[in-house]
Length: 244
Image (cartoon, rainbow, N blue to C red; front, side, top):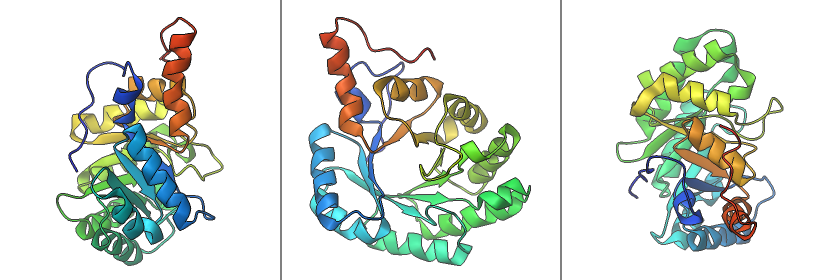
């Protein structure tokens, strides 16, 4: 699946914004039928990918039938898995057909300043996610200081990741912020993508993240976000970027 190339400036319609989106369903109670519905809705909306739990990767790939990419998670949501287990989980997801793997770092190691442990953890998963498959690194930015965000992003870059990602969406500290996205984007530059996820629920939220530097969005309420363009048009105005 070809990586989307965002055009300069904010998306001006739903179709353009949809190409930024990983349409996501990671609820523990999700069923196979829910995943089928997710894929069909994602294809209808024109999103880049769906993101599902590892147990649903093979099913999502079968339903998607090449219409969109399939992403999954690894070490989710705590990141408190030994690296060998994360690597094995990632390898199984790739074998099941996943195009992308979003791994969670050991946030405690980052908080303790053990950046080398974070780098080794990411590198172990990178070794299990071969060239041509995308590795995103979830740093849980709301739980980190700015200095810790920078350090973990640099570790991800050194370990060969393709993206850094703000959040799981499950941490009590919160999800994505435009401040964190901007800091992450400045740190990794154009070499890595930046994915904003967690709490991005409206069109202004989404546009604010893109304005801050996000090149991918993790959304569970994708249809409602994209419908913001229709709402703005019917109200006779252009969509707001949330002031960013």
